[in-house]
Length: 526
Image (cartoon, rainbow, N blue to C red):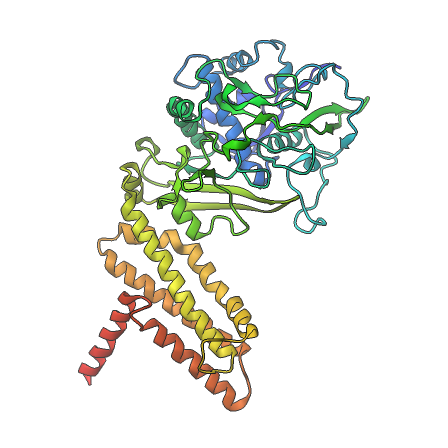
């Protein structure tokens, strides 16, 4: 078998350019030069759930190459990058480790050598690139599987990186990566994105990794020099694991035994796979705490963040950015070199479960200039306090709305123990309120922090929430009782409980005081 699809020499990676959106393909070294010049708009082969694995791969690989070359700055030429990448694979000077297809007893890109070179016992054959990927869909409802029967080379490239760097446990013989909290968890990512395009963030994160290298080594017990960085270079028989302490802090792992091949006389790629009796990296006891630059750590539990089906909802996002429950990821802390405008924090992750993937989540959280400055100065107490008060306020008004809705659907009965039917309907009708507040949470928070009159800004936000909740309640009248006197009694009782709840000092004292003052002013006017 000859070497095929060499990423160091062949323009296999399709992109679209920033200037005119025109397509252009690059080799890996040429892509790094293009990223350094920030001329890449996007990658046509890249699917949404593959965005972070691809970004992390490009950053970790470049940072590793720069460090091994004894440099502090990235290379500015293709030849410089190619030499540095080959320097990471000294035992394969012909570039076999950077080819998608090579003899099975030698490394191929993201594919470990097979001891003895024989794959005759490997029975699992995959014909479509997306079938290789880590997504598990249920009866093809959400995303059709195995569609890419005529895939391009970079479709296989993206699927391979996605599988090898973010897959979890999927039954006996199918172990997951080290950079997640358990086999049924996920590899979430939180990081700052500066103004610009793909290359702007890429350059930023490379410098972040290089600046944090010593700290990662010390905190995680990894190798400062000579550690294993590319886990696909060493032969793997599927029975042994590599010790976590032997790794480079920027290591790029693989978790599955896979080899790509070409059909005889054809250009079409297919994959053959087999299971393993052990994980590639022995890191089970670390609970996902591996020094991953994009993964926050739950402080109390001592575990890497795992997202559930709700994804990065406003409550979790506020904690990740400003709260004390999580140790922030290295990549999510703004720096003075990020600029003052157009910053946002990007949160990404796939929710996984037992034998399934539930949903891909992505959230962009804007960072205003004052918020940026407070984060740089590590003054998160004020931010955390404001965010916490806002989370509480949303919960309080939602509770008032829910009670009013349950009253409506229980025919206006003056009681707190509602029927199951009324409670279920109330929960359904209250969802749009929280969804709306979730969507505008950080814009409204930024507005308060940037305002010269934050108290007024906060009150106006509370009033807008109250108005939104009342509109939802009134729209629900159409689904409430419709029969004569019962209709009017239910609607009047629901409105009465709603307004009484908003005016209670036990709910939101600031809002209650505003309504009291309004009432006093009306009485004085009369």
